[in-house]
Image (cartoon, rainbow, N blue to C red; front, side, top):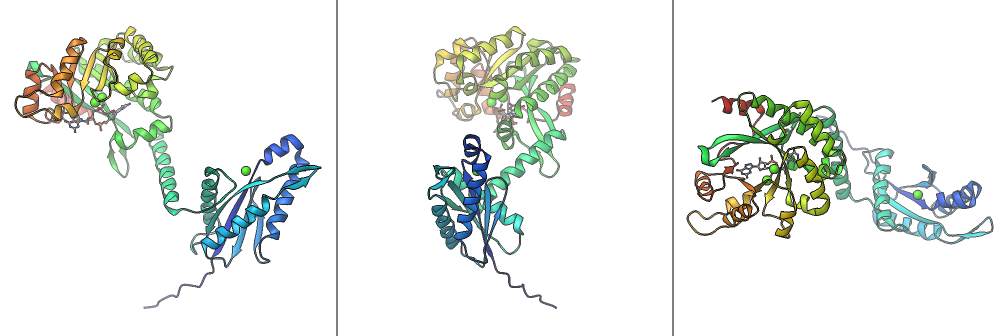
Length: 402
Ligand code: C2E
Ligand code: CA
Ligand code: CA
Ligand code: CA
């Protein structure tokens, strides 16, 4: 067996230096002065490194200093700090006293990636320097870099998945406890059918989609898909209800009302059979605005449900000002119900629902005991793994045809 020796490589430290305020100098004093400033900066950089080091101009107001043989990160940061101190000394240009401010990012070649790789890492360090207020030198941080890389890949992957239409809607039955537990409707729950990861739950992509501003678009698709599906089920089950979740960004989207109206028109679903769910925290963020949007939705004939009810209300009086029809009692209360007898938060929440004349739906019912107790407490409707898990549309079709 042949063993190849690793070739000895000397490492190189790379310092990326970025000047602040060049644009302002160009704008106020003209490009000639700006160019002089760049030249002065380059000279100062060259004066402060060794003969076999290289100073290169990158884009715009960025320079790279390459220091071959400098393998120690700490030492490289010290060089960068010295360079910054030099750059920060006032200088005289076009009769004006100017002070250059600059930030620096430091990285060392790792012997495997090329110049592009080390420049990318130095850039990340530079970003940290600027985030720390600028005028300072920072070294590359592999942990932060890995996180940023991961985030970048996740964003790319999500955008690709949206483009490729990899999302599907699953449906979880909602049953009538007083009527033998028959399925009276479903809640639409979005999933991502990922080519490598399989079925991905919303908890793993909704936040990112929200940050990327993609939830209104994705939610709009879910709404249309769900309404179309509901109408198909209504063929044999008139009045079958469809619940669809709305996020904060959908509620504040000025196009929401038109979108809901258009979807109802396009699909032909009777408005009263569509229930739009939003969480208390979403509804109570801007109470006045929420009340306005919800009233407009109600004018279309759709119903409104408060989701995760009981987990976030700051003031009960707010509830009475919102045009809400249904409350979905959070599963934490259902799961905290005592096995036998005794008062429970679920009971109290049901009492509140009745007081405000809201129809309750108990969420997260996982066993027969809970179902029985909720029925006795007059919960009316329930949803949970005990009855059925969320499933593709075909599963609901089979369930309804049984
Ligand atoms: P949610 O609206 O509270 O939906 C109920 C969640 O509880 C669902 O999780 C459901 O699968 C789960 N669940 C149902 N029964 C049980 C049970 O018996 N036990 C337990 N432990 N869990 C149960 P899922 O599908 O992962 O959705 C999570 C959240 O993502 C939803 O919470 C909702 O806030 C959001 N979401 C899902 N689909 C959409 C959508 O299309 N648009 C928007 N804006 N949000 C969505
Ligand atoms: Ca700059
Ligand atoms: Ca919900
Ligand atoms: Ca819920």
